[in-house]
Image 1 (spheres, rainbow, N blue to C red):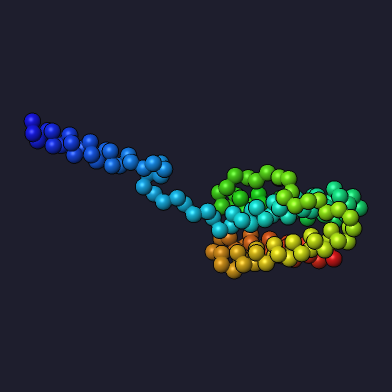
Image 2: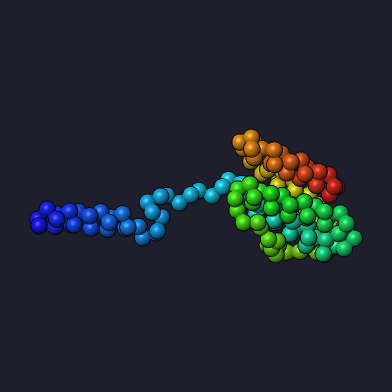
Length: 149
């Protein structure tokens, strides 16, 4: 009886200890976000900026709409690569470019250049299975900069 009581006590203590995780992680540390996750957000933000500029400056729509679509496609490809949910277009966090269409193009070009730099940095440190997609995004953003001139 003493032996049964000891086993029961030890078994109960073990069960209590293994189930004691207030965060419900099962003793595993939280997984770090994928380093490409910010590029998904950046692609969506660029798409929204181009969409907003096209709405504010209808004569630029033929130029800006394909660029916005390319950014949405990049976001979807990146999300698939990192195993994230397919992103949905969201409202722009920045105000719509008002006023001069030339100023809107300068702003978009600056954002594309920054986006190209972040994609280049991600590509430089990426494993081979990710580098091809990232290099394609870098090339597309370089093209976008030229189209916006």
